[in-house]
Structure formats: C-alpha cells, structure tokens
Length: 451
Image 1 (cartoon, rainbow, N blue to C red):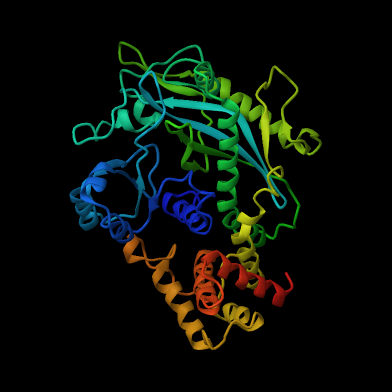
Image 2: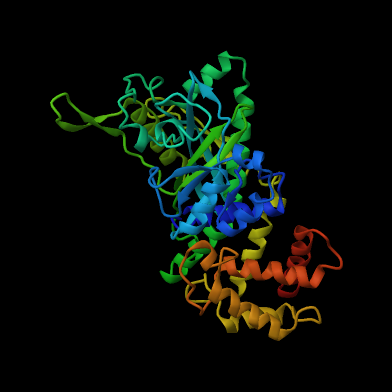
C-alpha cells in the first residue's frame, strides 16, 4: 500500500485513468511526473498565461510537507528542469481555495477499505480541517516561500506561534470538518452536495488504486501461502482534499498510514517539552477507530446497508457512508484497468503473482493471438525488453530521475503500457479514441482466455 500512494506512483495511477476518462477525473489537479513532458506542455502557453500559473513541487518520497516548494514563471521552471536530480512530481497549484476568515485549509478524510473482492469501502462522515496559520494571499514572488500561508500540513503549521490549540474540538487551527461545514451551511452552501462530491472523488480514487492493490494483496497471499478468505483485514486510508471557491473538492494526496495519534507536542514557558492530548484528535480518531472495529466485525449487520454506524453512542456517534458496493453500477465503466489486471494475473508468475517473465509474456501473446501484420512477434519481444529495461510509469527512467528497472520481469504498470501500444497498432484503423482501442483489445483477450 505504501508504494502505491508514493507521489509519483499515485500520480501515474490517477493520470492514466484521467487520460481515459477526462470528464470523471477533473478533481485531480494536473500533475506531471516527467519534467520534459511538463515543459513541452507549458511552453505552448503565452507568457501572460505562464506567469500567472503557480506550480507546487513535491519530492516523490516526501511526507509532512518536507521538501515542498512553489514555482512561478518559465525561468523558475527552466531552473528546476536543469538542476533537479531527484524524483519529484509537479502539480498545478490550486490558487483559488475556499477560505474561512481569510485562511486556507484542507480536509483530512478517512475511508475504510474492508474488502477487495468484492469491493467494500466506507467513508467516515467527519474528519480534520487543518488551517494555515498565515492569512492567504495569491502566490507571488514575495510570498511564495511563506509555507504557513500556502501549505496546510499540520506538521509545518503547528510550530508557528500563530497556531491555535483549543480545548473545543470545533475551534482552532485544527478542528472538525463538521464544524467547518456548519459555518459554510450558515452561509447558505449545500453541505449534502459537497459530501456527495467527496464520495464520488473517493470512489474514483479507489478505482484508480484497485488494480495495484489487488495485485499486491494476491502477491502477499501467494508468497505466504495464505488460502483465499482465510482471514479478514481492513485498511484506513487518509484522503487530503481541498475545496476551491466554487466548492469543488480537489484531491491532493492519499496517505496509506494516516496518523492516529491523539497527542500533540507542548512546550511550557520554561521550555519543558511534554505530550498532551489533543481534544480534536481524540474526538475524531477515537470515534473513527471504534466505528471501524464495529464495522469490520464478522457478525456486524451494519456493513450490508447503504450506511453504517456503531450503535453505542458512548463509543461513536459519527456514521459511515457506504461508497462500495453502493456505487458499483454507477462506475463500472471506470474499472477497465482492473480488467487489464485480471489478464496480467492470468499469466503472471506463480511465485509472487506480481511479475511476468518473458516466457509468461510470450504465452500471453500466443494464447491471445496478439501477433499480426500490424505488430509481429519480433516487435512484441522488443517492446517487452525495452519496457523492462528503460521505462517506469510509462516514461524513461532517466526522464523521471529514477533508477533503471531490473530488466528481468514485467510489472503490471509496464504490462498496461504494452497493452496501450498493442491496442494502438492493432485497432488504429477502427477506433480513433484510446479508450475504444483498449476496450477492443481487452474484449479480444478475455474471449480467448475465457475470463
């Protein structure tokens, strides 16, 4: 799970679905993994457009706001392009955030993944609103380095003297989402519409992650020789979301292991350090954990409805809303990459279920009768070798400042990129859209391997 939500990998997962279903994935800001691709795109903009855009740069393996900085203008982008030596993602900065009392904030939401097959996911109907500690101004050359103005990370803002700790969980620089939504509702905004948009955002994000999650889970079971359905487990994911001025939610990132700590650091006037309980963290996280444990009980009947909540009001009063299976039918079309993963797993290694050797790849080619006049067997072999040696996330390893692949086996991401190439070569005469070509190839493969 941790690898899947690393910034470059996660951006790749969202971007590939965004390329197939652009209207469904508008909630994810434009994000680049390869600097060269970004420069190719932005260089087409006028000088005025480019200078008005702000970009946020995030190290691939970074966390808690470390190493994040903002850029503006072509000159700064060119400097980054020629000087960067580590793997980063570059994201279009959301410059029109919704403000409360002049401060920018984001929402930490929690989703509980209780099953992968069939897919079951629940959204905790509250969370943490984390505020910046410096009043917001649109980014410019003078304030771009003011991290406490532009970055909502608690780990950064908590050290600012302006950070407000309150005994009331519904006030302060970190407070409950429901308290923020109450302010917005008092201003005439529809909170039900916002929750609906958040549910849709989480559903589509889970769909983007699902193929890789299933492969990792099946691989772990295969390596450890765990029988199917031998045990049950769950995972709590942290979703960081920001609302813009139009109240549209934007996904910033997903955390595989969101902090469940309920204490915060406190320094007395004498400089003595101690940990004290944070009322807002205790209020939210204790209810989250208590509700989750009730949710995943094998005997729990609340898991089967459209919503789920624990009945013991002393333990939890905040409900969970069902994401999946409730939205299965609405978003079945978006799960096309999951169909690709099933083909991949049909031919992947029996030892770990997440790699494909050359011999397994050739078996896939033969079984599905892929070779044709448009792309012959030799071309397909060269394609395999090129991808496993030089490419990652659909880009050359050099272009994204990452190490070369092992050059021996094919992971699912590489297999998917090969499918795109095959689909383009085989069906370009019949389908103009990438999605339609991919569907034709998947239909062909499924029919020939009886999936």
